[in-house]
Amino acid sequence: MRIYISVDMEGITGLVDADDVQPGGRDYERGRLMMAEDVNAAIRGAVAAGATDITVNDAHGPMRNLLPEALHPAARLIRGKPKQMLMLEGLAPEHDAAVFVGYHSRAGALGVLSHSFMGHEIEDMWLNGRPVGEIGLAHATAAAIGVPVTALTGDDCACTEMTEWDASVRTVAVKYARDRFSADLRPSEEARAAIEKTVTASLSVPLKAPAVAAASSTLTVRWQSASIASTLLGIPGVTSPDSRTVQAQGTLSDLYRQFGVWMRVAASLTNQPPYC
Image 1 (spheres, rainbow, N blue to C red):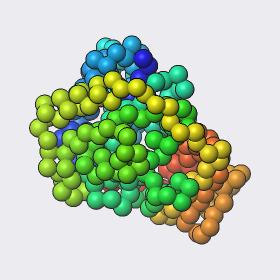
Image 2 (image 1 turned 60 degrees about the vertical axis):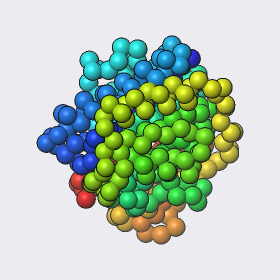
Image 3 (image 1 turned 180 degrees about the horizontal axis):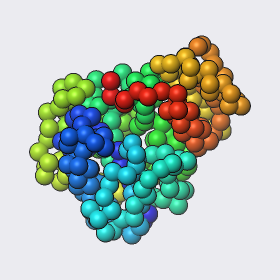
């Protein structure tokens, strides 16, 4: 059984602030070790379910957060950037299932460190007219590739967002949001035991192929800056319903990859910190 694990950082056990998840932050070094412990719990769960091949993708920020020497030896690590497929780099139809660790809720939600990819630079996103963030877009793209998402860990808001998107995905709330930068923390050992148990359970049932994705989807992004939207109109196929919103149509895999280009363009035009 081949398992793919995508690991973000904002939804990791115990982390609540930008200083916990950004390089140079006061508690970042501790945060990256906490990140390793959560993903190692997921790896142990996958191994217990019979996984023989496990790929972990470091999907947060610089994508160099996980220390290779801190990772469970049963897994291989994809590390660094740029990555054409962002949080899903390395995911292939040959994988039997995907697990999302440390994910967070979308922009506008009152979840811990909530945002959609780029802090307040992205005000909102829609997939086929449905509000979406990192969770929904990654889930839909994985499904289009042909890989079911079986489990997700994060705060309670991220878990709710996942359940609303796909109720079949098993979730683990490792903390409960009090506000955007505060939470009621689940004890670390308890949270990681729950991660391990839930991942094992999610992979120990018959894995169902995801529903066939539509041939074409529409991704819409509303930016904080009209300058970003205006610049993105230079990309063929990108249209703009208003001065701060752009959209494009295509297969989900192509849209996910193109969205990565949009973010690189946006990053070149702004110097905003992610959590403002």
